[in-house]
Image (cartoon, rainbow, N blue to C red; front, top):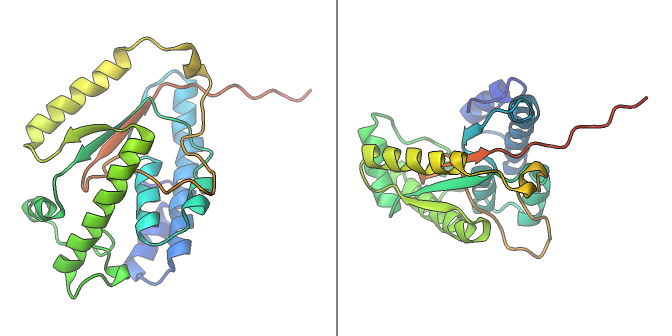
Length: 223
């Protein structure tokens, strides 16, 4: 899913400058998500569509936690999101394996995906390894807390894609349960609850995707 019209340009410019603080960047990401939720995802669900999104709230929550953002605070921000019917966590075995994926893609190490703002290493490589290792730990913990469907992403792209298609199709074909009509918050906001998981192309590059069939209750019109 692309960035929102509201915040997309601002996020791109902010990431280019590398000057905004950690809290400001998290608020930027949250604004982007909420705008897409209200103007893209919810309208589609209300119209009867199935929504598949590459990255949902969990990636943003994981990035925030690794950067030392208060877990209760970041959860409260994303507390308005609805629970997806499934979250697929494409888990790679190690941060070192991700290096090969990045190089084979023809892309260079990304400043933010390497955690360079955290000063974790002397260069992009060392910082990337440390940052992605920390992200994997957070995602693994979140996979237990939020019940992610874990898929082995260390295999070939063709194998992973085939399994993902089958898994998504299975969820789509499942009959809706009575509770599907009443969306619930995707995160718990208790201050004493330990921090988050990641969905949507998480990956470490472990992508996690989420699909939701839940339809929000219609708003009552004022007379």
